[in-house]
Every structure is written in C-alpha cells, then in structure tokens.
Amino acid sequence: MYLIVNFGGPRSLNEIEIFLKTLLCDQDVIPSKLPPFLHKFLFSRIAKERAVKIRVDYEEIGGASPIYADTERLASALSAKLNAPVLTFHRYLPSTHKDALAKISQHNSLKVIPLFPQFCYATTGSIARFFAPLPQNKLRWVKSYAAHPAFIKSYQRRIKDFLQKQNLKEEETLLLFSAHGVPVTFIEEGDLYERECNLSFENVMKAFPNAKGHLSYQSKFGKGEWLRPYTNEACEDLSSFNRKNVVIIPISFTSDHIETLFEIEKLYLPPIRAQGLNAYRCPALNLEPYWIDALVEIAQSSDLCNNRMLIK
Image: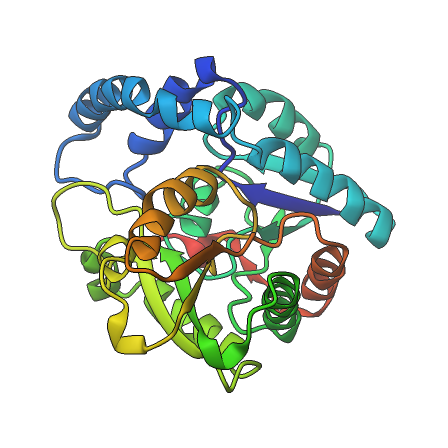
C-alpha cells in the first residue's frame, strides 16, 4: 500500500485564504519564537491579507491551483502501475484531511512517497510531524530522491524534450534551475535541503555538457535572509553567462502551480526578455508517463525510514 503526500493548493478562489492560513500557521514552514497561539493569531491575519493580494495571481492561472487535481491523477496512474492502492494526502487543504485519515486508518502499513524530491523539514518534515500521532510502524518513508537516477533522468528528459521542441541549441543556452527557497537558519540548524538541491542540479547538468547552468532560489517570504542567489535577482542581469537563450527549470517542483505558472512565467521571464534574451519556462514533470514510471522505480528501490526520523 502506498501514500503520496503533497502540499495541496487552493481548488478555487474561495479556498485561497484557508490554504494560506494553514500553511503560514505551520511553524515548521514559518518558524517564529512566538508561543503557538500568538503565532497562529498573527499569521492568520497575515494569511487573510495576503489572500486578497494574491487572488489576482490565481485568477491569472485560471482561478485555482492545478496541484490538487494533478496529485489525484498521479495517484490513480501509480495505482495502476503498482497494482496496489495509492492514497493521497494534501497537507494544507484541511477539508480533505478527515477523508484521507479515514482511508489511511484502514491500512496497517503504508509506504509514503513525498512529491518533494529534496528533503526539507518544512516540506516532508512538516507532513511527518502531522502524522506523528500515528503508530510509528504504520508509515515507512522515502525520505528524498534528489539524486536518484530515475528522478535525474526524468528531469534530463524533460529538459532535452523542451530544448528540442523550442529548437534551442545547448551551446547557446543557459539552464537556470530555480528551487523553492528556505531561510538560511534552516541550513544552519542542519537541514539537508541546500545540499540536496545542489545534488539534483549537478546530476541533471551532466546530460548538458555544452550548456551553462546556474542554481538559484525563489519565493522568498518575509524579511530574513534566505538561500541565495535569489531567482528574481539572478534574472535581472544574465550578461555574464553570454548566452542568448535562458530556460528556467523548476528543479524542486514536480508539479506546476502558482510558483511556476505565475511567479516564473509572469515575474521572472519578462526581465530576462527586457535584456534582449530569449526566455522560457520549462514545465515541471507533472503527469509525464516517464515520470510516473520513475516514481514506481523510486517507490520500489529506495531505502525507507520511519516517521520520527524526519521530524526536527
């Protein structure tokens, strides 16, 4: 039996606020020194204000995030390949939790596959904490697969297919890999995320010896220092790379959603084009058949760990 876990995303404009509230009130994602009740009070207000501001962003991508539906479709495809039930859990869609937990309770043991290739306490770790009350032997996790050959080959194929479709030559192209950022304090406290992003970047680049590559981090939130270089700053001046084509690759995302469909497409590509360069967004892996096959291989070949090992 298998369980795939993801963040989820608002399925309508009306769900933006509750999604953001659940996300921002999670102290694994947004750490603070405030007592939990004050953190919840403050960030609930921030979520309400932010929901109004980003409503227009979601309207730009069709009024909803595709990540929920894509995760459900992915589970169905994996179930057919694995010939076993594949359940889903959407961390920041609380209206889905009761049904998901009821289905999880029907199984004595589940192999959990996070849809986050690189381990972080704010993603896989947060979901593991949510499941902490469950019996420890119930869930056995694939911790991450940042350098797993099946994941690396999937992104290499995704990029190769995209370059061919756009008729882009490697020697004229910069591959700008963009991972979701995290606060620097996470890394200082022992989080493996930066190391694993570098592993993914370095391994994927082995298939593109004639291209130039660069790794950056996007979606900074708040005033603190996050992992650098920031993608938005990197996009402002790419002259040092001496390439006429720039392809942004969402290396830490397996599904397209607001960070790719709006943030990359609407905020990062225009300043690149303003420099006289050709700028493109490479889609995430989404529901590509080879990615589904890769997840089957990852599920069947990865070492497993228990829930407690993933919690900070």
